[in-house]
Length: 114
Image 1 (tube, rainbow, N blue to C red):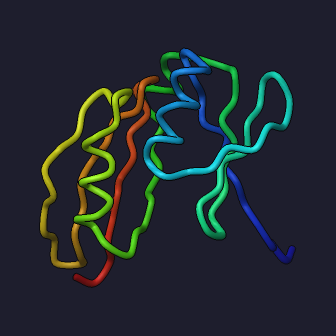
Image 2 (cartoon, rainbow, N blue to C red; image 1 turned 30 degrees about the vertical axis):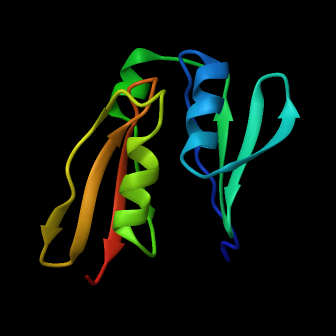
Image 3 (cartoon, helix red, strand yellow; image 1 turned 180 degrees about the horizontal axis):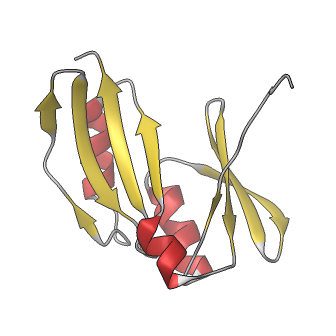
């Protein structure tokens, strides 16, 4: 098997709020259908779905690697639809902060090698 792409499907408790959240943190939305939106930033893409299961959403994690952790933190801090955001932490492999989306999903915003 030669994999050429992979995309995740993120659940949403409130589809419109989740669409607003991902737009606020720098992703561009492309309509797919009434229950699915494709979000992109550079070459990175994922689907937001009009589907919610609390157990799935509260255990869903996604690592998002960025070029500048401080710029990403500043942008995400301004989001009106985030649930929670942690301070930036320095790790031996780089920097990270944690951002919880409106459906309970956890985003690991990471700058590797800093």
